[in-house]
Image 1 (cartoon, helix red, strand yellow):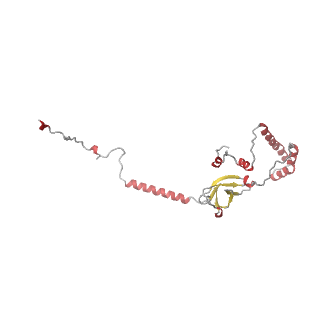
Image 2 (cartoon, rainbow, N blue to C red; image 1 turned 135 degrees about the horizontal axis):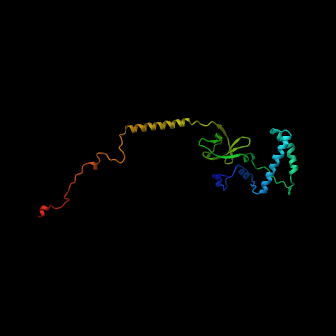
Image 3 (tube, rainbow, N blue to C red; image 1 turned 120 degrees about the vertical axis):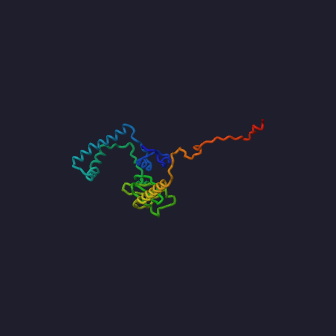
Length: 234
């Protein structure tokens, strides 16, 4: 993953995971990557077999559409491949687990987090989903919900373990807000121009006015400040 963990992943103590990693975790399956050359070579050999033999078999039979190719895979190619390349397991115990308790439609979906707005709507890939009144609960506003994009194309909204009913609505136009904002800005500009026109001209900053006190003629005066008269001391 080339992204940091989200808030929910960090609180749960998990690293950033892909949709595939999340599905494995919900199914209780450990992801063991093929980090060894032997494991990678085994996969590449299988791909080479399919890209070589399967393509030639389809060409020899004149198959060029998906329906006929799938029919050939089920009827002839897959049984031949299993007989040719299958290996008897060392332990014959069936290790498959039952699917009871797993909601595969939800687990195998693309899940993304969205925030519910104050009018109980959710935006998802350019669509506005309006949550119906009977599904609203206290605390749903500004809450984080999970949006499931399932394999059959349906979209589900899940919050606190239950699914919410909703219907699609048209996005609200933004022309009114834009017009109001532009009108307010125009009114402010007009008021600013009128105030600057009626105000007296401003003198340059830092230059004092002509009648500033220190520009007036300076007259020096002396005061006795309570000193005794010298003439009386003679």
